Image (tube, rainbow, N blue to C red; front, side, top):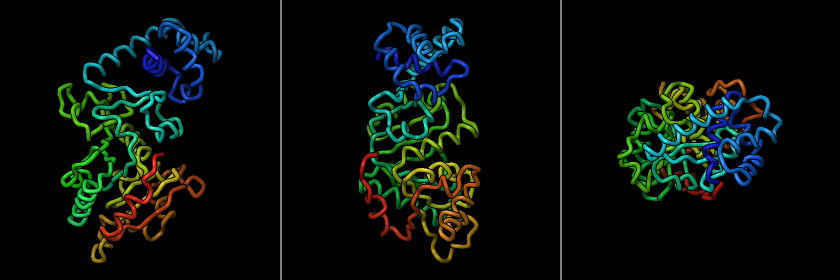
Amino acid sequence: MEYLNSIILSFLNIKGYSHKFLFRYEKYLLEAINNTNSVFEGITYILEKTNRILKVSSEEINDAINKAQKIEEVCKEFNIQILSFLHDDFPSSVKEGQNLWSVIYTVGNYKLLQDYSIGIIGTKTPNNHGQIISQRIGNYATEEEITLVLNQQKGVTVEVLKEFDGNMIGIASAGLDTKYSPLDDIHHQQNRCIVSPFQPGVNFDEYRYIEGCKLLACLSNRVILVQDAKSNDTRFVLSYFCRLNRTLGVIEPVESLKNAPINTGNMLILEKTKEGIIEYCNAKDLNDKTFNCEIKVIKTKNDFPQFFKEEELPF
């Protein structure tokens, strides 16, 4: 398995080859690792097996190998762990997620990716009630030793972390070298893991943010919507998560704030359930046929135990 990451990264740097290609030909990828002695040989082996050897030149292969080598060098310099879909610690929930990523990048304790975990999402501008709920979630998850999955953004995430001191998986929507230095504390924290679907050098933009939201959805056994007004802060996570056979918890606002603009997203889901989420997400391919999640209402902190601990089973 010595050349596995190099072969995978090289293919991703050859025009016309994607993560789906690698998932599709997993068998040949494993054969190449066991029957060849170099990255170049491994790539040509797979191309021959898939009848594509005449479609890629030696120059293209060598160029891709050089790009992959540079990625691996930066990862080594910044203490970034590369996890391919054939790695024992690659999360099965991501591997099963419609072949989205054949490789992810992590800093910190990547063993946390195997934990039962709850994703927490919400607005970047919570009101006082949203802040209180977020902090209560952080406190409860700490006391009950529940692993949380959080987007790296202000608002609800920041409020949760004010009271949270447990295991946390953070989602980065950019290359990890743009966020963490080789000497950052994250490399020594056993209760933290930051994961990204993007190679070093990739900067944040809206597309990367959407991909990060998909990764949060994949990694979460369950998700809680704390508070939002039907915005991009949460709809991308919901749009993907609701296609999975999992459970969404929606915080019910206190009676006096149900009509507050910041709670319109929550109320839309609470009032219209499945149809409300479809309207909320406004995604072309989310509909009655693709919707697959269960919705549960969380009215008070007394509902936390049942929601957080009802399904403590691995994927």
